[in-house]
Length: 263
Image 1 (cartoon, rainbow, N blue to C red):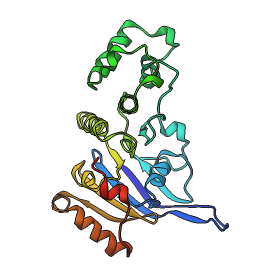
Image 2: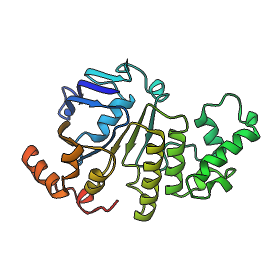
Image 3: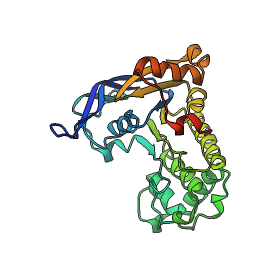
């Protein structure tokens, strides 16, 4: 479904700031996979998602999505089939526009906002009600007035309104308080399961990385150093991951956000 073959990316080539961001990444994602990605700061997690979504071009290698080579495809064209959420709740929606206007844009319906029909609004209301946040009663409100959790839930709905071939989640609950983060995470799991969406999710919580989805990947220094699924993943503990990181990376994993976070 998604194949990355020998993907490399180096920033600042030929300068004192040269940094290998991705080193010979080979990754095959099956349709319906829900993969959690962990690693210390600077491991290349967000860079990997940026490469897949087309934020920048890779130096070498290929990216194949559902049989189509998207390696040189523009970011906006990839956005037609790839949904994405960011850590910052301010991204992914238009704050000065109303909830229903944001959903109208996300739905891909043609025409000006004045062409929005009562049927459209009924559809938006029904979808919003599934979030369990009361947003269906605030459809005329500007998105900028929503809380961080409400915005992330709305952005998730927008990103999956027309089911994408691939969903990328870049620590999308990290900026939320624990209770809200858990609520958004529950909504995320529900949306992914109901629509059988293939998903890559970066998380800073190692326990969640072992419990969510069906596969866990660990990155370090721009490389995938561990990839586990099935029974082996089910029997893996956080302590096992810490030891594996030490064995493979040659250092201890001391990222406080990863070790101390509950969500």
